[in-house]
Image (cartoon, rainbow, N blue to C red; front, side):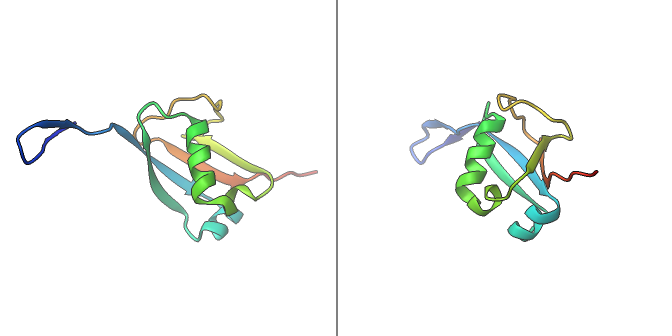
Length: 96
């Protein structure tokens, strides 16, 4: 993206990706929201998303057994995020 400043000089905007974060169960109760949008630098990874969320919502990562999926799939921490990706957070449940 480019924009012009007051002197007509071109400025480059930092490219970002917008990620939709959806929460279920206890994470939803903790954040008091079932979804929100977050912007990250282009080429951000799942690790970058996790670090950003941890800094903004430390109460979320204080929960035990929290599962995260990107677009419904379990991906590695190095997975590169794309504009419009959806991150899902839910408590891990077990049965017997």
